[in-house]
Image (tube, rainbow over all chains, first blue to last red; front, top):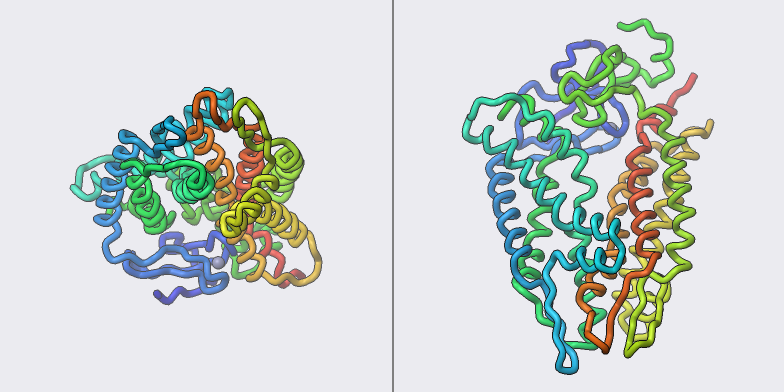
Length: 213
Length: 211
Ligand SMILES: [Zn+2]
């Protein structure tokens, strides 16, 4: 953990930071170091988590996450068989069946929470990081950064996974359940996504956007 | 230093008392005299405007919506033409009767304990910002972090309904339909999440060493 000093006098706003939770004025270390974890000395708010190689890790995991999510979208999710009848659903039917039953708004929300917002989040991260990784000249991707901040609270892949498990416990006694490829893909996706989110904190994200490294 | 008298109401070690405003979106420190953040362009304020009032209005709406979410059925099971609706609490009782105590506990925690505790916690935080007595800043901040963290976990029950509705559709035998409480409950979760986002924790820390 880096030493973080309380700032009292100067107004060079370059390496000054105001704790987002307690507004303590802090002087950050002069040199940005992705490996150092920074914590507010007063309220212990984590300003940024330490990571040895965040750019490469996030790119690799985002690509993996997107591939896994595409697999989850193109194979059967669950099958259900009872008394000679069977039914197989895809991941998207968790949303579309609600729509068919007249719950349009809820269907849209579920679709956003479990598929489209997590996908968009990873896609935007790649759009920000890949040009940085390969040193392509470009303007600061401000808009993408803002969009990411708005998306983040509404991505609920890990919550959905627990919801699926609870639903399975409910039906497993009354029928034969087959877990499809898509199910296992989503089981992989949720932890990958959660890990990426934990690496990309606000401080790190905007350092990337501002300095391109 | 900006000679604004209004800045003196903030504690001396705060960014606000140094005429600096932290950007709500990218956390960059800006001069209070700027209207928007020099890095990301978000609108700047020393503190979220009307934070407590806005938070309270979202959470009160959520509280009202929590009533229909519990009264009306969240889903109904159609078995051989017979419809049996079940509420959130009814679903928990059903799991208990089947002996699935762990699942009953998960659903009860996600659908009853978390939303109610969250609403109470936000009320308590809002109340704390108006109190004259010294505050336990650190404990209240941790309460806020917990409130923000658990927010989306209440969505579990809505996702359970979504999966059951999609999966269990056996022609002429059995089908599960969503109930209007699913809409209401999703509304409760979303409103409490927005309410928590609108609450500015820094208000808690502003209440120290008042003259
Ligand atoms: Zn702090």
